[in-house]
Image (cartoon, rainbow, N blue to C red; front, side):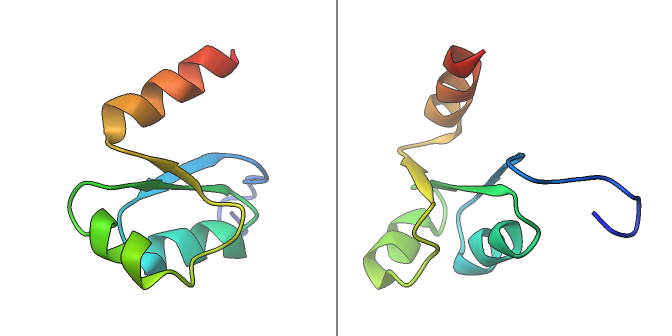
Length: 69
């Protein structure tokens, strides 16, 4: 965000790993966990940001984002 002067507050950030979710939280973006790839393990391990939205896969995450508009 700072490098390009872009405000990332609330911007969706989809990932399957803990670092993805932590990076999103660090810049004020909305962390979204997908349970594909490493996502199931990330969910089981816990310790991800409390504001993380959880979806079974990318298609569900996209559908949820589109439904917000």
